[in-house]
Image (cartoon, rainbow, N blue to C red; front, top):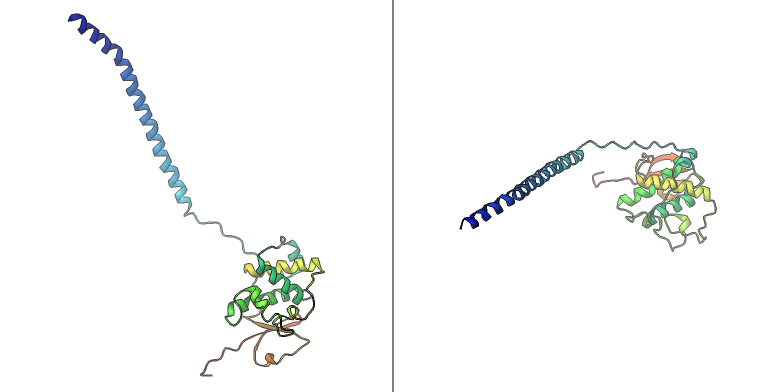
Length: 213
C-alpha cells in the first residue's frame, strides 16, 4: 500500500511543473490577446476620428477666356453628351472667341434645365433634326455632312465643353436660351429679352409673363 502512495506522490510531483508551465503559457497568451484587443480599438478610434477632420478644400479653378488657357488644360473626354456639346461648339462657334464659345455652351445647358426643351444635351442639340432648316442648330439639318477638319479647333472647343459641363465657368448670358449672329435678325428676337452680346452672337431669354401683367 505504501508503495502505491509513494508512486502516486512521485507522479504528482513530476506533473506539477508541466501544469505550472501550462498555466503560465495560458496566462501569457491571454495577456497577448488582451494587449492586441486593446490596441485595435485604439487604432480604429483614430481612424474613425479622421473621418471628421475637415477636408482640404479644392482650389477653385480660375478660367481665363483665352486659347492659351485652353491649351494648358488636359485633353477633354466624356460621355455621348459631352461629345454632342463639343461637336455643337465646333460647328456653331469654333470661329468665335473663347468667351463666346462658353456662352454658346451655356445656352445649350440652360435649355437642358429649362423644361421648355429636351432634358439632355444631345436631345437639345438634335431637336428638330431630320427636317431641313427646321432644327434648333442649323448644322444638324442643313443637308451637309458633319466633318471635323480642324483638329486643333475641335480639341479646344472640347475643353470648353468639358469645363461647361463640369460647371467651372461663371454665368455669362444671364440665363439665355437663344442666340443668333449679328448677321441675322430673326422674328423671335423682337419678343425675347436680350441678355448679352458676346463676339458675333446676341443672347436672349424668354420673357416670363404672368396673367396679371
